[in-house]
Image (cartoon, rainbow, N blue to C red):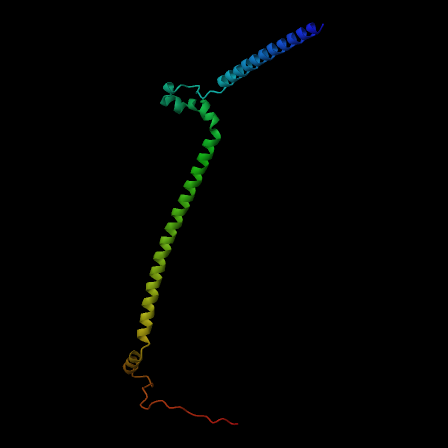
Length: 158
């Protein structure tokens, strides 16, 4: 009786081992078939082969139906957006530089005019020039003093 029980147990173990091996083979087959299905569904091929891309297909807009362009539409949009921003900032920077150059020229002209005015004023305010104007103007009652200036002392009333 013990022998029959042992035989039954051995048969069950053998059946289990065979079933496990069959399950493993089935799992492997399922994995490979799933892998093959995934490989087939994910392809990087375009609908239009590169040899059939002509100027007419590009200008006609058929290139926009290509799978690669449809997948990369967001990337292309971001690149175009940044290109527009770059161009706009560069244009604004150039306009600012032109304005700065114009203002620097105006500042230089203003400095030269101020320097010229300052030198003219200094020349006209010199004592020798004022005396010359007084001598040439006979109707003026002003004349140069012959006596040196002196200090008037006022006593404090304390």
